[in-house]
Length: 324
Image: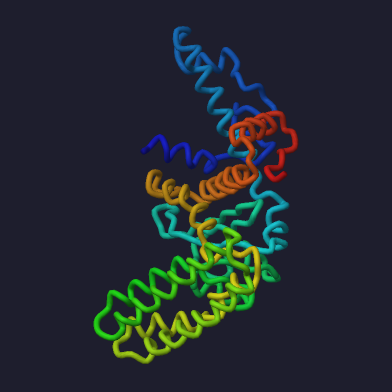
């Protein structure tokens, strides 16, 4: 655990690029292998090869951390120009305090940010205030500034809410089960559209009927007794129009699986390494996650790119782009 945390935060004490780390520290253009005098500092001659290897690995680690772009300059433009962007966020730990890991995922690019807030300002930082594509997300209020015509509410979250309603007591239980039944019918038709066995025109005609039934059920639930089920139903009705964007516009998925899958490595990182221990460690983590996820989306070799980055940093050459 300690070793992992040390590796994660290697960037916490990195110097600015082109400046030495301190007295006697190697410059970015220095050779990977230290001098014999430097190797002797690790012990006697018998320990020399191991010391050389440790020093080489440390220089390579520092070079990779310093060489990763803070964010590829093409990323914000690609996200803002994208027809569809998947957005999500999850909790993070920085200096053992609550923070948030955000992601924006498009067809070609994944961008991650670690910020102390879950507010709308971070979503605007990710996709830009003039975003004109469609944002697929959950119903979190941090996305309410996006025009409802440009939103697709995640149906995976809706299904979980329908299950909560179904697990309540009395009439509201029947409402939840009826909503689930109509959702199953909707997805059976949607799978046929994706398979090419059902025309979209026919699909839209069926959806009009399903939508009317769901709205009636949600309004019934909003007027029911209690506070949990009425609150859930009213919250869904407020964004009811965003539930059906994937029906009106082609190329949009009804779920936010792309963003949720992109966040899973970050969740594992947080659980195994306890997040990050400094602001610079968080910058390194978000750079690395953006880099690796984008490379994989473009079917590029991650190890080859990281080796190219560390080599370029050591030679003080321009850092290669990780976007094709």
